[in-house]
Length: 266
View 1 (cartoon, rainbow, N blue to C red):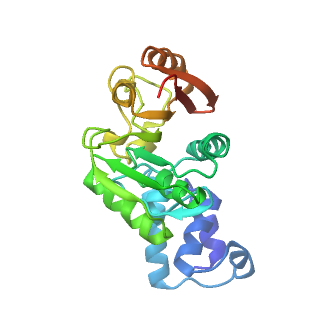
View 2: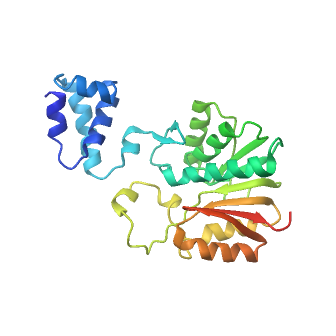
View 3: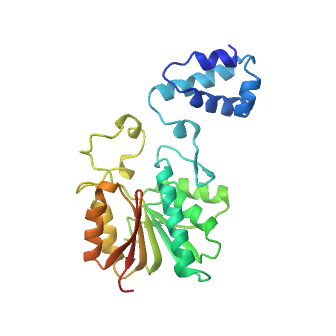
């Protein structure tokens, strides 16, 4: 089978995804796919491509098939033990950079990434904030921590890691607490459950309309952080802001899925 025929013979899978699979299996660029469209695929190549196509038809995300996903211009390793990094989470980095340049420029600050998952936030912050004193990444999943450590090593980021349920096993105060915790309400009926079914439930769903872990973190963060940066669905933002105000934090910025809270007293 030629490349051009393979691209036409896979109903149910988008062409751009097929091109991504071809790039991986053949180790060529997408431009080269066009230039080599008459190239004949050998038996082993076709077998590998078929596995990828079948997995995609079953709903498995491309990121899990390839074991990689781009985040903030860098490629991260991912597997089924961690969430796939999403574009909306990149706003977290932008907001923290803004806060850092405005309030902490030239200072050595401490940041903790709670529920680090793949480590995409912690690793990116370490590489983007050159003067950051230290970044601690915590997760209660040892499997997730293993993935995060792999990404830190791969990308050359000096990040500390700790097994902890929220801040339970962590001592000390922080300039910034950042967290992309589970916030999905199991009752939401607009979600694509087929795709989400491949991601770890422990990293997706939370009780109390998806807000349980966020509320627990805010309770623990009282008196321990100057800023708390959270990700949640926009429909949850008002409840989070109201809860945060009662715990001594005021909202200072909301953009997309991200809420930035500042402590009234430190």
